[in-house]
Image (cartoon, rainbow, N blue to C red; front, side, top):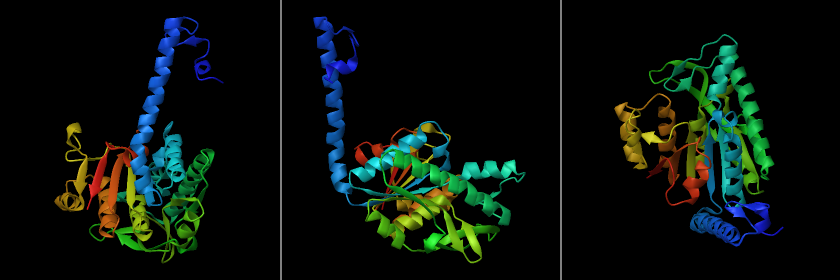
Length: 314
């Protein structure tokens, strides 16, 4: 098929048989091709920089339910692997877990941004996360990536200790990552595989629910990732959540620690900021907080100069 025939019998500005219409159609095709070439040219230095590096991406559970988001994320992560990066995908499922709890007559309770999880709830958590994990794996496979799903409790990947609330509250089966066994990740990354990890850990008396942001942080530190990316449902970190012009495009770990200490962060943002601080204090060089609702937000942040969201530097 010729390039001109892709437009069909009619060009965007008139019949292709007419000389002015054909010329304008040809100019449009050239402009589109040049725009694509420009994108590739801009991305090339970033591809070279990050090739061979490990990047941990955390996606919220809403990714699998909103139209287009699952496909966009899967395409982005598959492309990252295709150009030489080694992505590790960690997912949450908070909204779906809350919906499942409410459907069974249980009202979710959060303390310090963490879900109180009793013996019945941990079963709901595992069921919901297993479903989300499978959908992410299948989406990646549809886009040509070799992906596999794994729960953190399998093979000692994530060993947890019992977590408590900010004032010592009992959270039930909620864990903090105590140890990460990277052997399964090292094996899979060396064989062109993308791990998709559900944030459930092996606790002292059974499976424990782990905040997905904090699980991603511990994994990023353990695998010596060069970058951790948290995909959220807001544009990034705001100085004032009510002021749309207060988005912080770049900040440092020290500034995040100050915000955390001042107690000005929303309950949902506290685990994300804590995750970034812990990962970077453990040696991860960069972190990003992005709006996962934006199509290809991941590629825009990793492979373009402008980026989107909030970038955190040491």
